[in-house]
Length: 118
Picture 1 (spheres, rainbow, N blue to C red):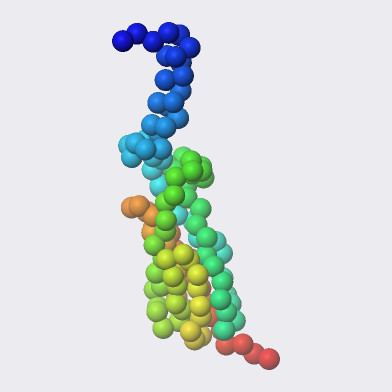
Picture 2 (cartoon, helix red, strand yellow; picture 1 turned 90 degrees about the vertical axis):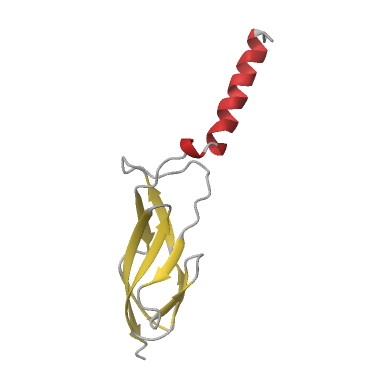
């Protein structure tokens, strides 16, 4: 089957536009996971959210519209509770690392929780 010039260009554009997001080999490789806020201190009690920025091998932010959820965890579960959405609730004063994993890359941020002093 032979396509006319206009139909061939349309088919090529549709293949290119749709193919990249559905082809796992076309995804940008996550090289670095940056947490925000970075290393910080908060007063207990506190509730807030960490966000991640994903960087490719060149150090550029990845913004290709592909959802890459981060798996969050705490280095010290006694100090904070962190959900997979990055929501943190402090439990007591202390120090912990907040860890986010996306694909095969991991990022961390240090968190110090201090008791509220009136």
